Length: 196
Image (cartoon, rainbow, N blue to C red; front, side):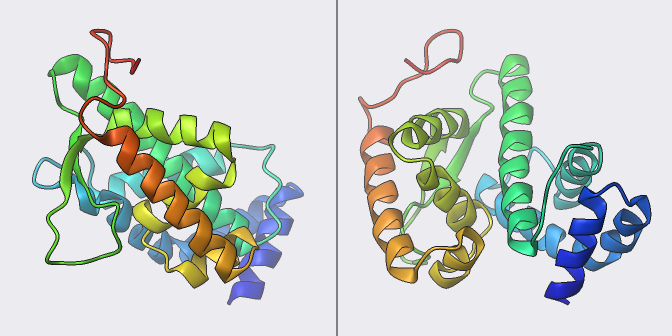
């Protein structure tokens, strides 16, 4: 199955439209799982349903003729990034329509049901992740894959093609850095909605 996806992605990247048609039924279920995972932190006020998120991500993927994807890992990493971008776009529109409409629950600790997640503004989180990317480009990718997609350390290491130890170390740093940035008095939005 993984080889089939990789081969189809290579064919699609080379311009084979039939490969795209063959790819859809193979990856759609996994994309829906990614979408559900990305949305699970929104609480009761969901801005999108998983199906809508997946459809929008798929349209962006399928509409990009310049993609050069050679592996299943690259495809799902790109899908996770697109889903984050889509959520940010929707939250910005929602914030424009209703002040404070971008607050979601965020748990930066590994899944522990005893720990209540903090309510954080997703747009501030996105800005913090952008700044984290200035420190190291892999950090926000790890957060996307671990937090939004729900991948394990091992799965994240596979997607990013680095060692388990590297992901553990960088995940620990990224969580600590984001916790510090998201504390009261850390990164704050301005009246325009753009964090200072």
